[in-house]
Image 1 (cartoon, each protein chain N blue to C red):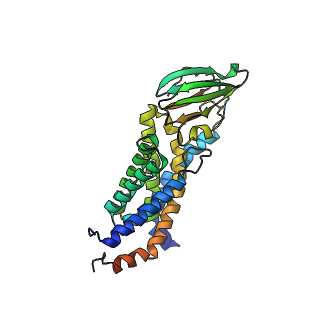
Image 2: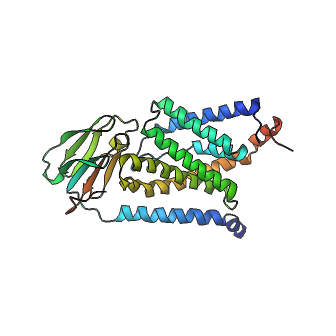
Image 3: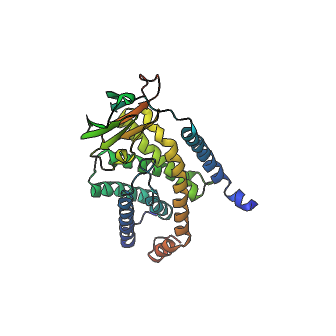
Length: 127
Length: 178
């Protein structure tokens, strides 16, 4: 057993450092208290395209947004938003589904479009 | 080992075909929870080539895989291609440096570190294109999963190398200087 640890000492050190660092950040992100989003910002390459007030949405509606490659459809309902249609090859953005909590985001790298959800009093917050 | 004989050329072609098959199959894996998570089976072959043949051969296989899988998927010179290229090259660079200059690490941890840098390279391209550092949001999740898949793929390639099948083939076809 001792020989085993001695043989793989540096592997353990490297993997443990990277693993613990990423695990702690992931745990922080997963476990931090979630607050419902108030508004959502739709961006295309750092330019704000549209601000949606999620509290005021009565029924589901679809917004068309021009991406860098193709037009996209974004669906909004009360308290949640999602990318519902995109012509990107991977469709990761569509697969991600509804997002509703403050701080969450959905990205479509192919179209350069991303949606951020803001919490209370963070309407001007922008990454 | 600079010699390129018929055996080596055809063997490389077989390995390249395998990486294309694996890479293309992987591209159909849907995303759940975190976008873009893949097991990275291609890395098994890249590592085996790196150990058995050298960095130049690994580079050829890696570049060939990136170009041909993109060509198959019809996404050549689009975002997915550049993300894949950046991830593969960064990961290969780190793995080559670790393999040749850091003798203390075993193959499975070299593979894990390579997988982490693969994620990093992809995220960097996304950050530059999207013009927002917010894409780094996904990095911790990707790094955590990269370590796990990287270790698994590294262990698989260690297993392949330890069977000495390729070693015997190289010996048979005069690629080992004795």
